[in-house]
Image (cartoon, rainbow, N blue to C red):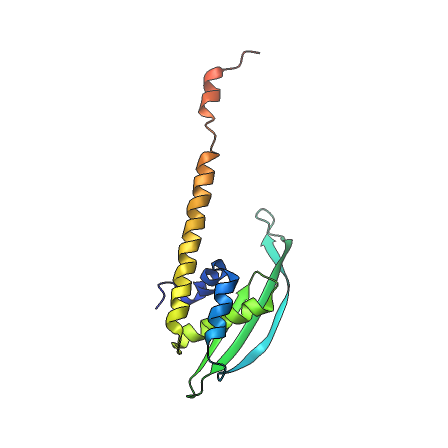
Length: 154
């Protein structure tokens, strides 16, 4: 099973290439009955923040958002629910992630493949984090040298 808590599975799956996620979702049996619990949607979400001094709420901006909540029933009668909220405008991507969420949560056939893909996503996120830290370290400025110069205009 994945070492991540369930609420972070979709985040890890977001890091993997779209083709890998599509191949995995298509590998599940077509005999499974996949029914939506709510209609999959895509649109814009609003990022709402609270200003710290007066406590007034304001909207910082918009972001793409796709949602999917579904139920999977296998031919043996096993049933599981999965959900995904993705900062993406593609409903298909959210549907694939919700399907993976359901399969892994209930350990339906193929859950090992989902766990492996999540592990790949964890590693890809860690690699990106290391790259960003390296870039940040290269752009760091040492302002302590400015103190040594002094103010010659005074």
